[in-house]
Length: 133
Image (cartoon, rainbow, N blue to C red; front, side, top):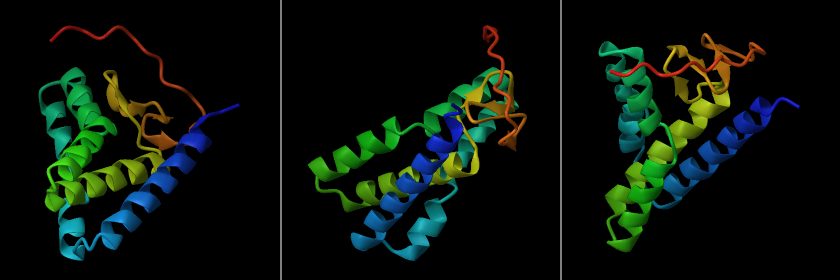
């Protein structure tokens, strides 16, 4: 069984819940739109090398960061931190839903959900040892 459709459905669900929570908590539309693509700024790491780019991109596209930020925002009663965490989570969810996954160091298009950027290509990327920077 191919797990990619399940991971994409999970992304849709996470996007929906995070977006609904954001607006339910009263987050403004302008902030949502401003932050919606902010995690993609991590692609700047690819200017250094594919290995550096994949590390930076993956760090910005895992749920660990927004979970920690959101928890800190709840703990310290910082609604802006919670809002940013929810938008960040929604971004990751929509990326997964459309097939953009975590990157392998072999190139931007090789992800855990697709190969060479073609969503649903049916081929899994080959994982090669990461060169040291």
